[in-house]
Image 1: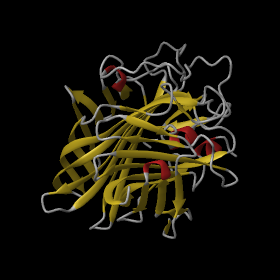
Image 2 (image 1 turned 135 degrees about the vertical axis):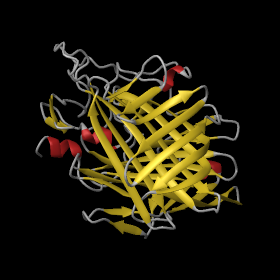
Image 3 (image 1 turned 180 degrees about the vertical axis):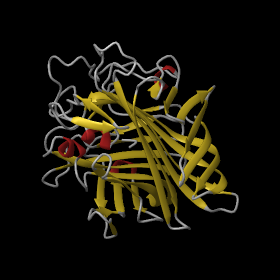
Length: 387
C-alpha cells in the first residue's frame, strides 16, 4: 500500500492533530500534527494532486515537499536447495517540520523508521528488527538528487538500474541486488491513488511489480544464497486516512501467467468496506488496468492467526475479479508473520509471504506474493495522543 495507504501503518502512526511526543532514539520530538480528516489550510506540506507527471529514475528519489513517504520492498526467494524465504524491508520518512527555525544540525525536519523482516516457513521462524532515527547529522536520510535512502547502516540505493538493499541485525539480515524488470506501474487515476473523500487525502503511488532478485539473507546467523522475485512500492503524499477508516488489507501477487495484481481494501470502524478501496492489474506487457471498489471482491476465509497480543488476522482470502474471469485463493505458508512493535510505536501489523492458486478464464493459475493487514491491533495515532 506496499504496503497503499502510506503504506501502511505510517498513516495510522500520525493519525493525530496537536502536539505529541515521539520518543525516537532517546530524543523527544514535538509537533507530530497530521493526518486526520484532511490537511489544515496553513499546512506547508504539498498535497498529492491529479496530473502528476512521473519520471524515472528521478521519482525513485525522495520528495521532501510531501509529509510522508516510504520505499517498500517485499519478495519471495529460494536457496539452491529450493528452501523458501520471504523478506520485507521498508524505509519510512515522516516530515516533522519542513523548515526548522533552530539552526542546529540536530534540528529535526524528518523522522526515519525502517522495518526488516524475514519469513522462514520450513524453519517456522519469523524474525524482524526496526530502526528509529531522526534526520539528524547524517544518522538517516533520503537523497533528492539520486535514489539513496538510509537509516544508520541500513540502505536502499540505485546502481544504474539495479536496486541494492542492505540491512543487518542479530536475527535477520539481507544483502540483495534487484533488477527493475517491468516498467513502473502507476496506481490510481490521473497520477494519484485516492484514499479518502477529500481531494488531498491521496498519494502518488507506483510499483515495480516483478524484480529479478539475487543475493543473500541471514536468519539467526545462518546465511543463504537466494534468487527469486521482489516487489517495490514507492508512495508519497501528505494526508491519507480519514476519521472512520480503521485499517486495510493489502496484497501484491505475481501470477504464473506473467501478470501481477495489487489490491487494497480499506476497512471502516463499523466493519464495512470503504469506497476508496481499489487495485491494479498489470499485464504481461506492463500495461495497467485500474480496478475500482466495484471491480473486485476480497473475502476472508476460515483460517486465522491469533497473536500474543490478542489480534486475530484472517490468513486465508478469496479474490474475484469478474471482468477478468479471475478467481484466486490466498493462503500463507507461515501463520505467525506479525511484526509486533507495541513497545516502540504502539502498533502491530501482519506482513508476510503468501501463496496464490485459482483460475483465469477457466485455466489454472498460481503465484506468490505478500499480504499486509493493519488495524487489527491498536492505532499508533491513538496511542501517541493518549486516546
